[in-house]
Image 1 (cartoon, one colour):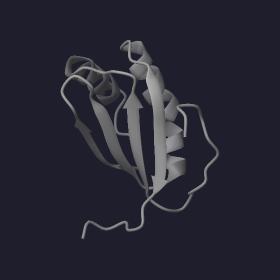
Image 2 (cartoon, helix red, strand yellow):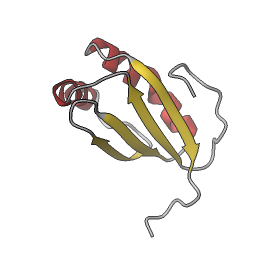
Image 3 (tube, rainbow, N blue to C red):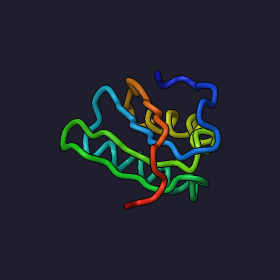
Image 4 (cartoon, one colour):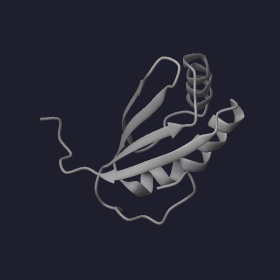
Length: 100
């Protein structure tokens, strides 16, 4: 799924969201996270992680695709404001919504 807004394919189930910028350094990632934290809690986000040194990508788990879609524009705008182009955002339904 591209970075643009999508219709909600998985409205009532948890989704995994993989955010894939063209290229994002750890410094740019830290800037993005600080900006997102200023906006407060992102309702519905259950988990966030980032990985990579010079090409950081983010992985999140949301309560539903609708919850993620409610914050997608803010996320993309924040990334773009930090000079980061979003190559794609993949959204996938989770097979299990519990940690074991």
